[in-house]
Length: 476
Image (cartoon, rainbow, N blue to C red; front, top):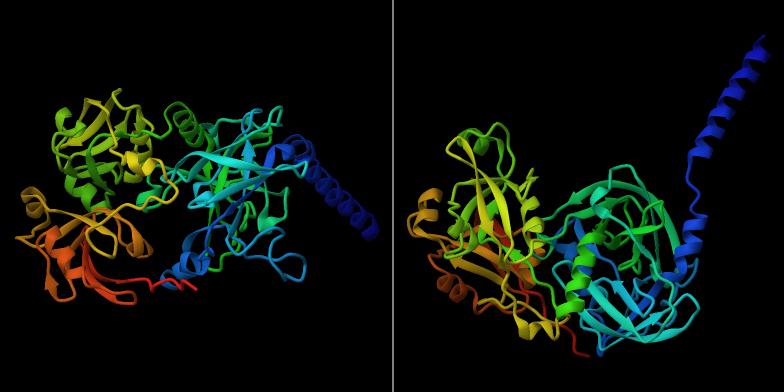
């Protein structure tokens, strides 16, 4: 009897395992069909890429960071020795994919940023010079063009219908190993971060193994359609740690159409500064639960002011789409066509009302568009912190008399700190600052290696943030 039970149990286990195996997807046909349209991208720079400063330096400042993964580092073989095949001192390596038979290729902006020459290696081993047609640093998209015809192309999917748990496949060139295939599932959708350069993207989070060189490569669904572009990983080592992020293909293709038609990307703007709402704020405002985007600043003569939106309003829906977090709003506004009219639902004084808003256009520096890959926003101080004076209404709301300036943008060294747009800087060291001019004067003499201590207020919390000027690069 014991033997019979044992055999029966073994049969059940084997049968169950057989069923599980039958349910697992087979990726072979997907790969065979799409791999020929996936390319290796090499970007050559006139000088050595300062990847240690750009990436390892971030690790020193923050234990866990979003790391853009490209560059010549990595193993040549199982021993992990040598440099990637074909990569020189000034070469960064990434991936891309062909979206039209006449030679348009999509990749990440950070793969080709600042490059003097870009080369695309096809699956048939041909190497073609590529022209950078246009880039959009804010979504990390670059559109390339090679002179060729009858090229294999990928099918474009719909990234607006993705769900957690769906199988996905990545094809790319990690460590310059062309056409490497990895797979996993969608861990989350519409994942957002606080960086100013990421506010227009709701990332697809996956557990697909992604490493340096995968950047710019396609993420496929089981139908063999591209639903994302692999862009970033969360890591404190530079290697894959189970969390990867991809740009939704609908965001990327919107960029492509605009770059093709007018050479740059236009974004909608309604002229509000917003923040998240915590439980205490929700109780104070009479909201049934924390959610939406609390307006803490209105741009004078902007679309929001013209529509009658006030500081203190909570935007709970934009053009029919509910907002769970304030970070949900910028991508929706940015994707809106300038000049179009949308409905914005507000919560004000315990009541919900809907107002029509005519979307404006986000200003852009047209001179920088010609060289988007090397363009750098300017600030009035060496830390790259752009600030604005507080209005009388903001000071009243914050309980401040004449102290403080609000951060409107962050570039340069300050991007490696936890500073965010909307933070209020109260002091530099022990000196109070009352205006943007005072802040810039207090920081103007900083030298490479110097550290400034900033007293920062965010919502009801106040803390010091240390910002260090990067050391001068070795020109040798």
